[in-house]
Length: 81
Image (cartoon, rainbow, N blue to C red; front, top):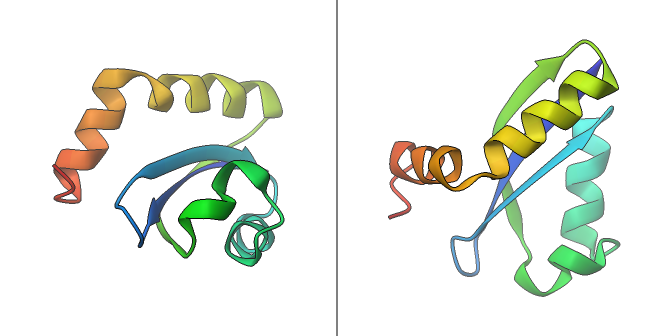
């Protein structure tokens, strides 16, 4: 099982969208500073996870959610606009 996850930075309310096979481990990596791309905006809260049956499905779902319209939909849903 793979997952697409959406994180919100508590520092500046920015979003980070990624994919993994272990959401809890990945969130811990982001919050501990092991991920260079998100290190400066820690801590993060997990907003959403989406289950995917294959890595290919997770890749497609991640790309879909990173596009402007889906990202804005998430921002509106969680009051981040």
